Image (cartoon, rainbow, N blue to C red; front, side):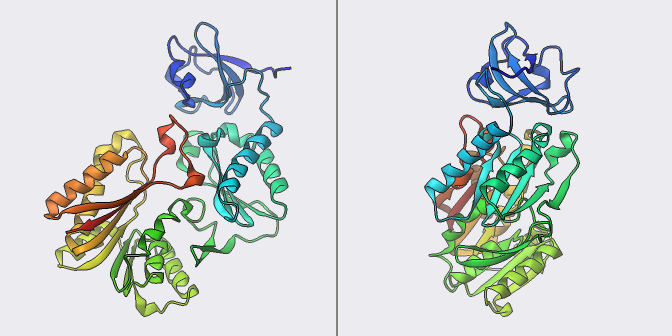
Length: 396
């Protein structure tokens, strides 16, 4: 028997996107608004003429008024429903790489679990909840994860900006009693000490772990700049693959200290590195103007564009950092340039780098272009779930 949920109706001709596979309805698409609905309340969405569209949850405080959970009109959204979805998501990843214990277990809408991200770091599960609807099921989520991985340390790292838009407080805590927030992880044979309560995102950028291997065949005896270096993953991979010297550029003293610790943890001499605690854009500009020459420059900045309205401004930022990097690269050197802004598509991203190359008087060869890995799979047609771009360019 179907659960009794409130009925929510769309304005005329607003159901098309959801029927084609999108996951959201906006507040200006809802007929009559959301008066009388609680944040995160479950409901069944109908078209203006009464046709069932989907089951999901709502939030009157958010511009995204409805988020889809199921196309089944008889769906009961409860712990069993969530358990099935979470287990399916986990099994998909483990079927592809059963040996891997570091992966994104749940990826929000891409796993039909909007508002929920779970990253697995072996026996640590990092949970990010970004919506009121998923917040209401938080205890169920933790219980399901504990059943799936008995003994695992659960960490809730719900610090993303969308929580504030949903009217939710920011949360950063270890959920499992009497357990710590630190762990040493191993990625591509390198060790990284992570404090999940002091780290960015969910602790480590698992989406780049395969892309770090681009450095394997190009780093030997090279001088490398790792800009926006965070805890040093790109630069440490370069050193592991034979780089003569790596300069880290990172504005945060906390993250620069993490890079130092990670270098020592892997047995590298501190003299193999320079640690420049500085704004990366300013430092790159300073270096290029001073005539610095390097063999490889790696650019992996945080998202410059948080909304489509800021795209023009973000393009200027991406162009500036790539221009400065290109000016300091020796002929035949390599640029690795990344973007995690989903509003900036692949074609636009490459176009920005080409514009920078023209201004720098350099020629580029795109050797390889990569995106996000299997555990961050893109759900079509939800373009927002495709965000990561990573290009390897030879520079002349």
